[in-house]
Length: 125
Image (tube, rainbow, N blue to C red; front, top):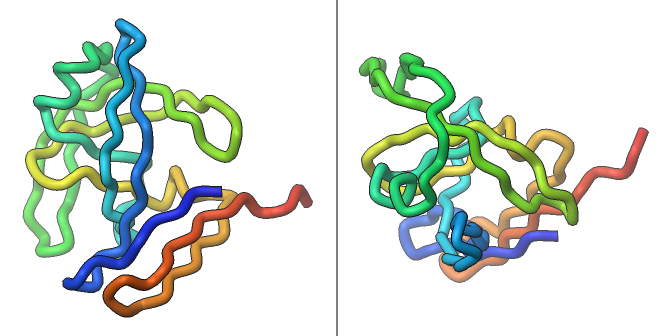
């Protein structure tokens, strides 16, 4: 399970440990964005720190309709007790977790400042 908190602006987030190629670890707080269909975004400075290999370029359409051209990278993340290969999109701004990473999970949010955020794995079907 992954645990997080709802911040004062009602933004639900969870912290995740990211592992750099040199073995060092950094904890990053990720906002949960249920309107984001991909797996994860990170700012370019964190992607540079982890020396992730480039995967492809893509165009994202943001909630306000603006188009954003960005690079994607291959990363790995421990998620529900397993390491998964994921696609990380380089975006200036706060790190996000999207619905593709949350697929196969139950998301529970107590939608008030200081509320609990829990992401648990769905039972195998």
